[in-house]
Structure formats: structure tokens, C-alpha cells
Length: 220
Image: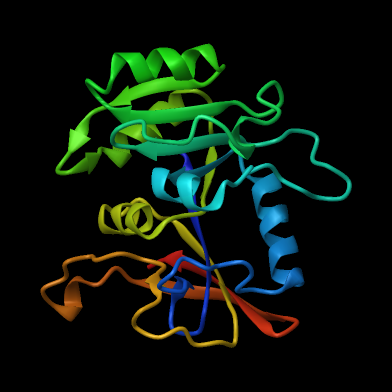
């Protein structure tokens, strides 16, 4: 395999929502589930999000474990227009955890220069449809020596990876609440015409974490 192994982490309500319609998401799952997410970060070479998650959540993507991991994962943001915030937690501790931003080819040179001056590693990725070629992004990460990637959001990035067969494992943390159809989905539209086209996974582990459920799936 010339790309890293990809694990998609989902933290949702029982009906698969990651936030309310207004975007409120902290905290859907409980303390025990969130601690396991930190362990997952520490166990991967890189953590990946989309630009929407970077803007909405201001995440650090650093593994907050006790004791701290010997090596922090690299942080990866995938974006069409390099429209990520120019300040926030993503820029903390760049000397220990690089921030790599993949944007579409021919993205704004001025924006590239700003991010480069801030210590961000900007890479151009080929376009695919209205987004970025995620297979190419993963191949570039593989060429950097990245063997495993934990994807933490959002729904569009998750859907893109699932639709192209790039998700090898799901780690799904499910809270005992319901947010309804107006909540924001963990996976955006897959444009399936038939049930037979649905990507299939097999459950390989299941456990309770306080009030939450943690389910692990491998690609079928």
C-alpha cells in the first residue's frame, strides 16, 4: 500500500449527528470517550481534518495523554482555498507537531506566502470534482513516511474518503442522545443510487464507555 492506513473517528449522537443545527458540539460524548480519542491521536502518525472543522472548532489536534506521547502526530488540514484561520490552537507547538495544509492547485500565492511565513507546510494537491483529490493527499503523506492517519472531521471530508474507498477502519463513539434531522451529519451526502452501492464495514469491537458506546469497524 503506497498510502497510509486511514482510520475515521466519529463522535456522534445515536442518530449520527456531530452537532446541533447551530453548530454546538461540545461535548456530545463523555469524558471516557474523549480520553480514548486522545489515545487514538497518540497512536497515529497524523491527524487530519477539513477546513470547516478548523474554522468551527479551533482544534489543536495534539494528543493530550498522561503521560504525553513520545511523539505528537503531524496535523493535516485539507482545504480547497486555503481558507483556514490564521491564528488559533493549530499553530501551537509547530516544532513538535508540524501543520501540513493541502490546498487545490493554483491556490492563492499570497495566502501560501502567509502560511509559509507562519511555519506551515503548504502542499498543492490536484483537484477532483469540486474538491481535492484525497487519494493524492494520502499518497503525498505516505511519501513523507506517514503510515497511519486518524481523520477527525468533518462530514464532507468523511464522505469523500468513504466514497472513494479510502477509509480502512471506523472508530465510532456514540452518545445516548438524539439531535434529529436538523443536526449536522457525521457523513455528508454519498449520492448512492442503490442500497447495494453502500460502503460496507464489519464490526470488530464493541464496548461501553460510561454512558457512551464505542464501536470499531473494519472495511468489509
